[in-house]
Image 1 (spheres, one colour):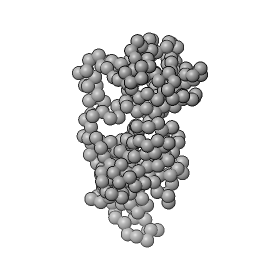
Image 2: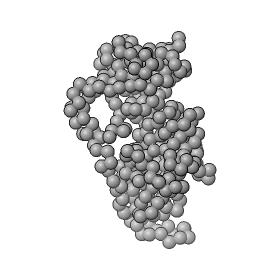
Image 3: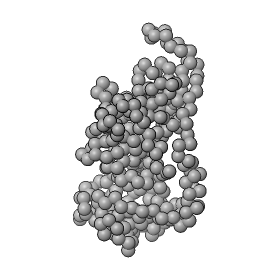
Image 4: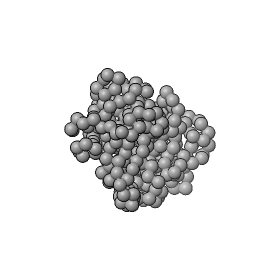
Length: 290
């Protein structure tokens, strides 16, 4: 139900926040830790999105090596007596600001983690208050009067419809026309050295995401495919309006028809837009393109 919950974690020793608002991973404040692995020391910033395994690190993390995590404030080592049920490495525990803790495996490449609440009813209440019920949002489209552009050869309407920020976008594959929405997430198949899935928020101008494989910040995704028909969604004739990276095309429903909707393939870039023809009739509220 809470597919894009962003967790606020604290050091289990000193109780200070580990959140780093200046460095984002998955478009959310990251969890900053000092790390030591394979004889090297550095800084790692983990994704705060529960279930995401993305991170930024200034040192290489050899797969299979066990890391030691340290609080950047009190410099205490964060470790527990519990062992990972998957690989046997020590688990590293962190306090949740809503009560309870999150534990992650300290072995590089192991995805085992667990979450425990001190009081489940209180935690659920806070989740409802902050995130609401999944799927409770629907597309909000309004109209506003705009001036006719005499320089354009085609006749346009006196009114341009606006899809407001926060509107739920019903997304479809432009090839097979099947829905890309699964469990209130926009799901895409991606390849970046290995194949996995990228889950994006389907709400306009909400840029939360998570993936089943590691995606480096500020790097483009090599391949984007429909999870149903497996056809490529990347287009060659259009580039990102901000960073000039390749873009992927999906279809969204508005005005009883499907519109071409473009997404930048560079991790962390928030550019998105409609086709030039659709811009005569519809605009996206607060989007980077306008």
